[in-house]
Image 1 (spheres, rainbow, N blue to C red):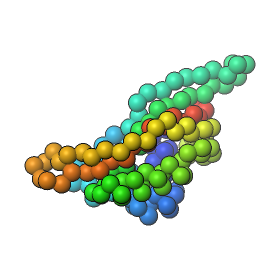
Image 2 (image 1 turned 45 degrees about the vertical axis):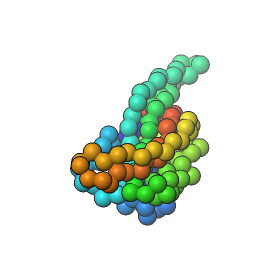
Image 3 (image 1 turned 120 degrees about the vertical axis):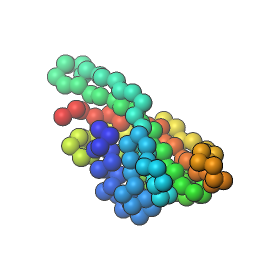
Length: 133
């Protein structure tokens, strides 16, 4: 689902106009240009339907939008939220049944490389429900 989520986000011009194709799984490459998006998976749940004819999987994700300025990280997060919140439909090789936004947070990440330039991050925590292929 992570690769399918990247495929889905890359189809939305309101997102790619801000980050181009800089959408990564787990971490961005060192020295990556800002802004960018990182997708982290936290866990998953399996749900059986009441008639046992199929299954539904729920995966918890954080979508972290990083930028040099706070207003820019919020703009990227807003673009992602407006597109993905309540989304259902195709996503790469998967079909999403529902997207549930659980929380949104903003933070400043101090520099870790000895410079004085940190990053601003806006994080969307969400659950995606889909039927595995």
